[in-house]
Amino acid sequence: MIRLFDRHQFRKQKELTGLWDFSPIDSKKEWPEDYNYQLNVPGCWETHPDLLNYRGLGVYRKKINVSEKTNLRLVFKGVSHTADVFFDGEKVAHHYNAYTPFTAIVKDVEAGEHELKVRVDNSFSKESALHTPNDYYTYGGLIRAVAVEEINDAYIKRIECTSYQEDGSWKAQVAVVLENLSEKALKFKVEAELNKQNLDFAEVEIDGMSQHKLEKEFSFPEVESWSSENPSLYLLKTRLYLANQSSGQGSSSEDKIQLIDDLIERVGFREIKVEGTKLLLNNEEIELLGFNRHEDHPMVGASFPFSLMKKDLDLLEDMGSNTVRTSHYPNDELFLDLCDERGIFVWEENHARGLSLEQMLNPNFDRQCEDCNREMVQNHINHPSIVIWGILNECASAAEEGREIYKKQFEQIKKMDQSRPLTFATREHFKDICLDLVDIVSLNIYTGWYDWFSDDVADYYQREKKWIDKNGGANKPIIISEFGAGAIYGFREPGRVKWTEERQQDLLDELISYYLDQEEIVGTLIWQFADCKVSEDGIPGEPGTAGTAWFHTRPRSKNNKGIVDEYRRPKLAYETVKKLFRDRD
Image 1: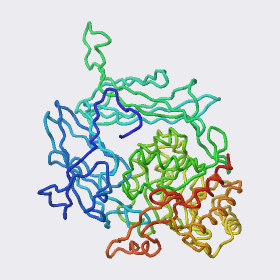
Image 2: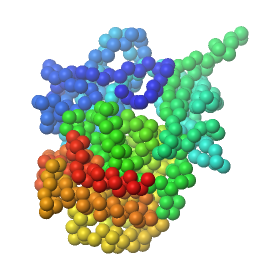
Image 3: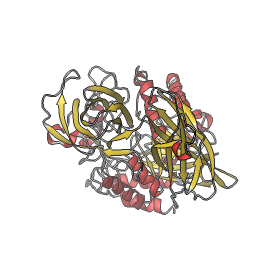
């Protein structure tokens, strides 16, 4: 399953789910002689008993049958973390980053059987600026859905729809990106429909081997607003017609155009903005009550089936939560679809967590972040549930060179989407020099856990609030983007020492109660929803990457701050959070 709605009525699409041949390899210079495994796709190779801790290279193989000559568009929703795609032995794509989708187009594919191979690498190296040993685990494999599409010589690459209110009515800027794969210029007509309303675009001529973006503003007087209480969604159906390039006398209007492609998106009409210290949805104040969540589970790794996504959201909503932060990478679109349908707010962020300035100056860092930001925004811009874009969690925001990187990435995202506020989560307390760049100030504060020297929640927060007001964050809303305590499931002790469920329960009760009473705090996001696996390894000879640091501070090689454990069994804090969040209704 790729999405929760059909994306095509004309374009042929086939999901490549199921068993693929697989073999580990030692070097990019070799190909397997034998494929000794059959692994499920989507899936992580660590779910196989022989590959539980395998980090390195592997090759997936799948046979594809084509009934007639056509162009193929290969769609990969997530490969962890580096992919090289080969079609009939020829390389057709290279992609870095496990958590963003990419495509590859193969032209003029003849009818018959063809071979698709994907070489995957989940190892850490100096070439990998974002995937490093970290406080979560980098799995290996085709971790998200794969599909193959048959397309004509021109197709609809993507649709972007951003909505806003004007005089009490909804309007939207609709953009349709087209690609002409042929070598000659062609004329096209785009038609679209939303809520039984026809949306017409002007006819356009596109040069050969090029892309073109059509944009037009439309009014939608009959649609309902999307909100957490009423998450109204609409299908935006677009169709691409090839106009008759040389219509002769006597030809009818039906002869002049030919349907060659279609694409369906799902959108919601809502406006999110910041006014002073308030966060507004459709001009009404909202409060974000939620969790940070990793895509991690002992049975499936990072490759979540739909049933487990739904289970997580069931538990989140049962606790009274209305928000998920996709720490620390873009999430599977199926999960975002569920959030759209259920009215769950989402803070989605790019993939960069806890990197030092030295790591951010890696020669590949800028390019790999730029790719991640672009793929995140372009692919997820239509999800109404996403109300915040975030970047660079706990990176070097106290350094001048770091500030330039933050500024550059915020500017990149603003060029693609100005309809959502921007933020990043900082741990550079009393040192950060980037707070003027954001719409929302977000703080990762672990009072009572790491910040043991400041057990007084109010004193620490108020001192930091005064500093923020003088250093770029005055009159801005604040989100406590991480806070919490570790607890080992089942470890209970009358002394309520650290790592007991009782200690976690007590601390969260105190922290949540205080944060919810502060007027400028518009969001409290607990770290974290569920316990997750962490890295044990590092890069030999690479400063600042030794995974042993996580091993020494993470019992069971897991980040144990979940309100539920890795199998989703509730800890004592579950009921405490549930009471505090539900009392806000």
